[in-house]
Image 1 (cartoon, helix red, strand yellow):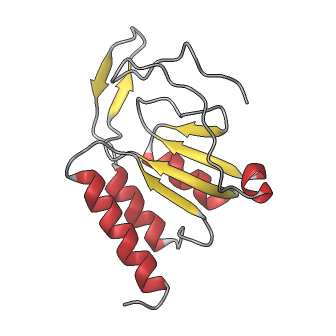
Image 2: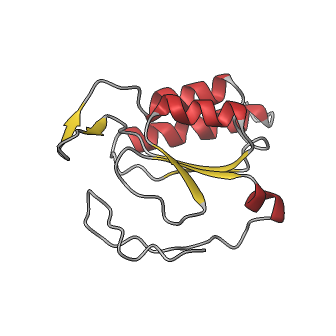
Image 3: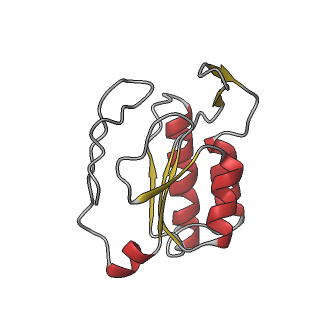
Length: 140
């Protein structure tokens, strides 16, 4: 696993370093760990990074994804000049709705994490996921 020192989170300016969770199985390492964020770099080279909700959904529908980490705000795009602009785009809440609609929940995707710092959107995404997983497990 390559060290990520030197890569910086574009929002915070902090150096992103490599880290691996200890609860993974060998199957998890063969499948995709998906990082969904329009600006922040993934925590390690182990992740496939997508910047839009649509791209994330496509990967989850067509490939073996064991882990996904989600941001809520997915509306920033970098221009050819290197500046960032906000565009109208589907967000993490839209993506969670699609994940529920397509049953992209455990056990199909073993680990789902919301890393969003949005004080409203992040908790909404978590509540939606918890409710869907609880319902799927028969907990109403």
